[in-house]
Amino acid sequence: MKKDFYTLGIETTCDETSASVLKNGTELVSNVVYSQTDIHKKFKGVVPELASRAHSMKMASVVKQAISKLGTKPKIDVVAFASGPGLPGALLVGRVGAELLSRMYNAKLIGVNHLEGHLLACDFKEGTAKTQLTFPLIGLIVSGGHTELWIGKNYGDYKLIGRTRDDAVGEAFDKVAKLLDLGYPGGPKVSQLAQKFRSSGKECKIKFPRPYMRGTFEFSFSGVKTAVSYFLRDNKKFNKDEVCYAFEEAVVDTLIYKVLEAVKYYKIKAIAVGGGVSANKWLRKRLGEECDKRKIKLYFSEPMYCSDNAAMIALAGYKKFKKLGKKNFNIEINPNMIIDSWRD
Ligand SMILES: Nc1ncnc2c1ncn2[C@@H]1O[C@H](COP(=O)(O)OP(=O)(O)OP(=O)(O)O)[C@@H](O)[C@H]1O
Ligand SMILES: [Mg+2]
Image (cartoon, rainbow, N blue to C red; front, side, top):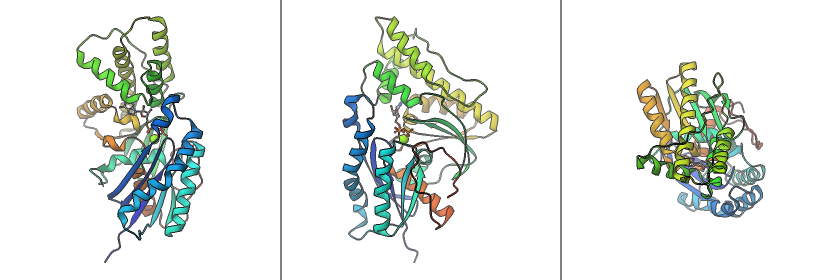
């Protein structure tokens, strides 16, 4: 009888401490996520030193909870951890924890690109990794720290074709929320107020620029954020909901324009969207409509897997292990890691 194969995923790149167990590469046994939001919200942003400390405080209990379902003598075959990109101190905590666990369980240790995890999160459906993604595809990563376009030829075979020159889209959402005093993280709140304005049926009198950066696959969101700050400076009275609406429209129009340009240029008929901003309902709806019209396959992860979690790291680690076999993997952390094809 074939033995079950267990992958333990560890995620500590930013402000979530997470551990997850994936059975046979498909069945999600656990996905424990501890979010540090309460620690960082009074600073209206992530404080790296506090993030590292919180990871080191929480790691043991989060891992314990994640493996508790495996009984008193758990068998772990692979420990996969997010080795970059992310905050250096936070990554180090993950690396030390993962290495220790791999030695304890005599398991293979694998470093995984956190952003690849975000993309592969599209494979999860109701706690099962179903391998839904069809390749080739255009990957759109929209997260707190990154906004990127990739060509994905297969699992582990990626090429970066463009990224933001300045702010990431999630960062722009958070900065606009800060300007409007909406709390941290602000993306969901901005989106909620935008939706409120949208459903009010009122006419929007504000228009923010769309940074299309024509002829490139690069992004730039700092100008939109600056336009919002100038608007707030120059207008004593304004409706917050309307500002959020105008901002969200500008950002979503831009993301859709860019990803559809990539699809057209590379003649690829599938898009997968990953990262925290992929939870944005307006982006999901609008991009869904555009893809339906063009008969493009579109993948989003289920909302609970859009933000940072270790399930996506376990899945990426499992796939990497299956493809590259049992040799030693690169386990160096790299805060500025860029997506590339698997080589290690
Ligand atoms: N519904 C939403 N609409 C817009 N933005 C959102 C929404 N939900 C979450 N976000 C944004 O997503 C970001 C968090 O995403 P994620 O956890 O992937 O980022 P990160 O891990 O900090 O960055 P990275 O993945 O680049 O390292 C935050 O900027 C947050 O405001
Ligand atoms: Mg992330």
